[in-house]
Length: 404
Image (cartoon, rainbow, N blue to C red; front, side, top):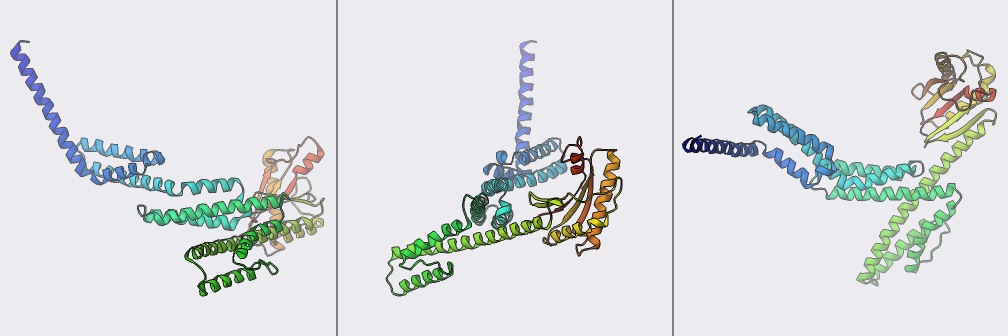
């Protein structure tokens, strides 16, 4: 190639490069205009850290936005706009998810801890308050994600109530384990009242509980206010003490309510155990359920007919169920491992149905509450290698659900 040809080639190359450069600038300007709201949503996402906090949703949005850009480059504006609109929605979803994790995340982590500690069994009311508050916080964020001051207050309150529920649970577990008595719990909550009363020169008597003492403290505060004997600093202190007083009163009421409900449930469970002789049935709690494992009820080989001599035992079972009128009930039947598995499954279902029908016919327990299931040989509780083990595996269990 001579110098003239070389110069001509360079000029053509430069012109071609300029053409692509101008096209690239034009494309960028058009893309910024067409995808303005999508880019705004993407920037808002990054501002709250959604690219890390809500990575999966963010990644989905990025992928959809790339599809929009590809369609735009291929000169398919309608498809590009459709993808961009979808990407914008996903970005906004990622943004909201990240904001929820920032505002509500610590509370949800604490609620998971509460679940691990079985708080629901000991402080269900306080735990429900915490969950209601955090759900309200998330709902408020869905409506006002940028003005989230109220949602933060709700989340803080939810966090406080979750801690409160865990605290109640720890005390009630100590009662269960005999490390502390119910009396000691009440005395513990009375101590702040006593301190406030002494500070105000009120005699801290609990002769008829705390109600009279609370009234006397409130009366004393009003007297001091009316007499003008309270300086500004003392007024602030009194207001603070009044808040403490209200809080202690609320916690004391909630703790007493939790204790009463816990004791009532405990008494119900004990009363169910007392219905049966040790040879008739074994009762125990499993998570939130009460299980009555009937030992004495047996069937002839291959039969599902209930002998009349067991009617009295089943009447006791009905009495136990009726102590929990709000609970659903499952009648479960099991066999040992002898015979074929499919036949064992069928006979266990027939036996469960027989007990189910007996309960329906001899009580006011309706079909909506009652169900039956046969498990065959699939859930043994002992070894079939001994006669005793086989006898234990051939059983009927009545499971009263969610008694707490």
